Length: 273
Ligand code: DGL
Image (cartoon, rainbow, N blue to C red; front, side, top):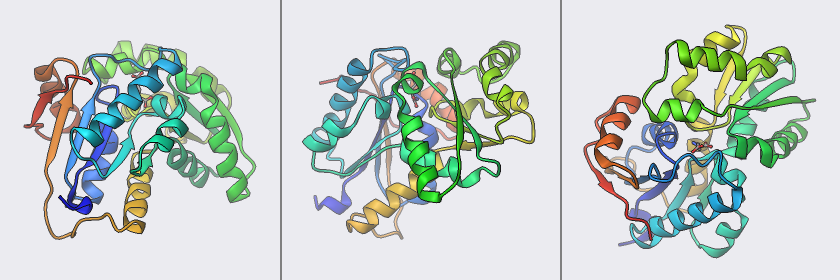
């Protein structure tokens, strides 16, 4: 099959990457997509980064070798924060991540320069956003004052399909206290699971704080990159979407359809490599 006709591969530890997948589907509906949610091994955020890097490498190789992916979208901040240099060096398809696009979106949206990022323990402790937001601020010549907060527990709520309610609110009030106290005007949801909790996060942060997710920006980055490489399909068609999960397939279909608001009819078991 010619390279241009091959699918775009997407992966995450579970359902979070569906927020990025949705933006990709909307922007490039003619493409075929293969999504792998590593629900059998989630969460990534509390695991050592070298273990997450190993999983990310395995998933990327599977997307290329088993599904013929022409590009990989790493729809997971923790996997990106674990370091993708090795992966980029050993595979010859484009690898698009969520951290750089998210940092650019954050810097573009702020008015005061006081910004926040929330993410998993792995992402926040890696310093990936301190680096990426600093670089985006320097490029845009904006003075940035960044406050980061890890939000352990948020991903688990999403993976259970519990996105609102008292328990989520109580946890959000506690974990978001540092970014509220810092008086940020813009908050980046630096974990692809968090947009599913946007209602609660928005209520806790208050209406004056703008929430930014990396999903749209990542989709634009993917389109630019594929376009520049001549890897975009003829835009007049409609592509296919296949989903794979390393965990329970029925749970993935049911919860994923609920979260995405679209039926995930083609879900299979990803056996690993
Ligand atoms: N959705 C992922 C992220 O963006 C990982 C969540 C997890 O498995 O802890 O970081």
